[in-house]
Image (cartoon, rainbow, N blue to C red; front, side):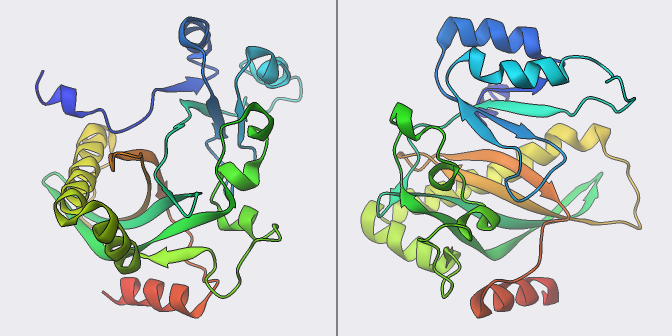
Length: 249
């Protein structure tokens, strides 16, 4: 029970349409703002926020059947309670992309790349009702940020992990930041342990994962998602140098 209590590193989450009735029951009980994400897309496509069940009625009509008339299978979505108190820098939301190499699940052998980056939104964060539909504010995907007038081509809306650590240490102290990094490492290990029994074990294979992690305003890391085959294209020279160094390492 003590170990199970430590698996509190991700927001409340349901898979739709399979968990639709469970989700509706929870929504009616607690309400709040939720985020819907299709599991098979990239670059922020198909993601939206909502705070009323009526806002997903169109999605429900087209996705609640096991199979559509044209024979295509229903698209699966993840619906997750939206973090309303993220840590902000300059009033803007950001998340972390961290690279994890798994050589084996049995025994578990994991390497964490020391560097990584923070991806920023160009728009100041707000949870006002009128701002819920503003994906430029709530999503840090570079493909989305590139379409905004606030996009900075020079930085690519990214900070490397060293710059982020220095900023957080100056503001929150070294002890709190070290504890945050320990929590991130435990988050990664526990997330891998949770799926170890379902992964095909092949000693000839390895996997590179891109972990997307967000910090709340108390420096608690929360897992957003884990990406297999994370994008390795580059937007800036710093981005290129980071990713080629990671691959070389």
